[in-house]
Amino acid sequence: MHFEVKLEKTLQDRLWSYDLFDILVDGIEVGNIVFRRASSHLVRICGHIGYHIDPPYQGHRYAYRALQAIMGHIQQLGYTSILVTCDPLNLPSKKTIEHFHILNYEEVAIADPEYPNQDRMAIYEIEVKP
Image 1 (tube, rainbow, N blue to C red):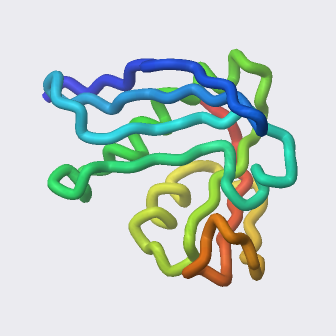
Image 2: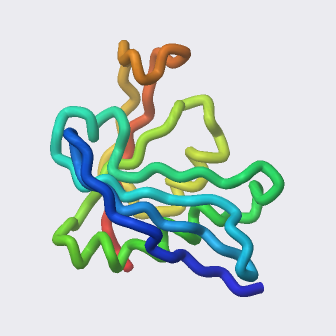
């Protein structure tokens, strides 16, 4: 099996810029991971990292491997720590994040229109370590 994380594009919108990476296994796109270059209040809820693995490919630690793969990129941008957030009830996401060195953790109440069906957010600060 050949695992690869490939930078697809860097985008800029009114809030932040972000790097979008494709996650490939044996040349097949199985998902993506995004690094948000942000310091606004939104990063506290959205996090610096977002990832998605297509359902047929879930359960193989691809999100973990992808985040590990882009740590060098994040470090080159000058970050020593980043925020990664998830729904506290999303156990697979929590498990993925908890494989990294956690510097800080908190669970907070949220009232954000971006997350209408969610009232709590788990916020992890993890060390950037390639």
